[in-house]
Length: 323
Length: 295
Image (tube, rainbow over all chains, first blue to last red; front, side, top):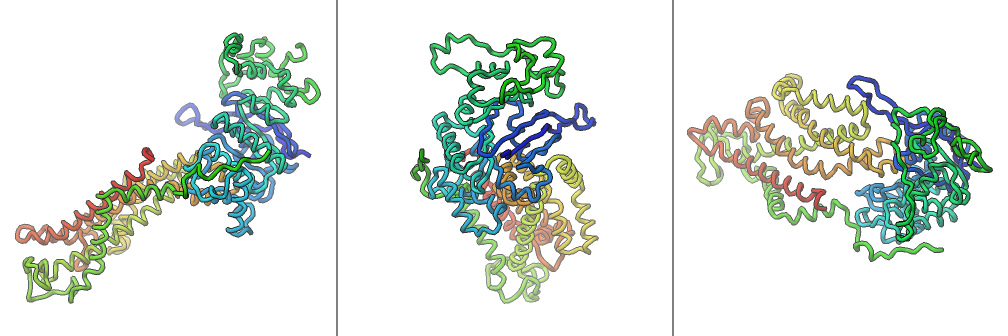
């Protein structure tokens, strides 16, 4: 069953015009993006910094209002959903900076139970607190934590509280916006395993946004690669990691350092050369053309459409069949 | 696989909020704490002291006109040229000045905080419009405004109070707006939105409480400012009118008698100076305690 669908989604930010009195301009971040996500599945979204991953995540939840296209939640257009504020219980988000995501003046019990005041207004204060303590326990924090404040927590504990707040309303989808990139490696594994375990127990879908390919490989069912606001490749996890098709995906894979220092030393670097094109003034061709080792004039003139290149696999490159 | 429940020893024994920590640090500041006690003593004696005397500050005692300060009952600090007891008048004047000081700072603070929080949180064109308004009001000449307002309200304490609040809410608004602007970009605000909170509730539950430490520090500086501007206006004759006493008009009449009798100036002036010193030490202590740099 399709839980979430985006159709030709475009998102941009308004920025001031070039001159003092010129009109505001739109800085486009995400272009013409379509995706579907089934209940209980995990979609990994990868891409370099500034490619629009986080903006996409927020636009899917309508925390940022998209400038084009539409988002369908269980087949219903997000703009027409009645009482969207209360329905937000079904779609939650966890953040990159776990400490900044918690109000420093509130106790953990209050942070976690606050959404319930909107989602389930009939709940008494006592019941809401009990639910919050239960959610904290589910993420591995004992009841003793309920009356603590965020500054008394470590990063990993704070991220657990963020997850507890997300699951307290029993969501069907959680957008994970780089949830582990601010954490130590050992804590990263704990948080990832916690998310996978909660997904198994509660059956929610995840959109896992990250630039860490290894983490995405661990948690995702499907992988979507973004470059400058556009999807360049989408594939099931195993197929993607076995053989990434798009040159940009291949470059991302190559950029992952080898853990063994002796092998890392001998590795032939394929660092990307070339400039990122200006977002305000994008070139007509492929978004990756300026840095792609295989780029031809065709790439610089015509943008390749995202198309089916193998069963369940899509990519946006002129040359994939030629490979 | 099961979740490993973290042991409670990893965190301190009980939850201590930042506010609690900050007040603990404030209590360690001896000068500030002494100021708190001295200020409390002055406030209590201003409000209850006059009841110890058999007359009010407006009763003239014709047996003692311009009596010197001989520390003899009942006129401990002597009387003024109308035979009114100086000490009682100063205490009663303190009631007016302190009430206007604290109330004015409170009202100006609340208006400023809400205005600034909304402007900083909403941002964009609304913010621009709201802050330009503040800047225009900043440019308005203060004394002319007070004269206009006292014409409007027909003079009296209300006009004075309105004028003081009207000019003093601007700075807290600017300070809180800057704070709210940086808070609005924090992720917990986004989390609140994802939790279905309305913008009004976000401002009231997240933005305003997080501006509180700045506001408390600034508020403690605002109180002396209000007392001073009340004194200043009463000194000019626009504020509190005779026979009602305030520190401002007591100092004013004391100045005119300065040549012959210094004590008429020294008692109200000294008390005002003492209160201002106390409030400044308290503000200083609060600023030290709330400084986020040495958390």
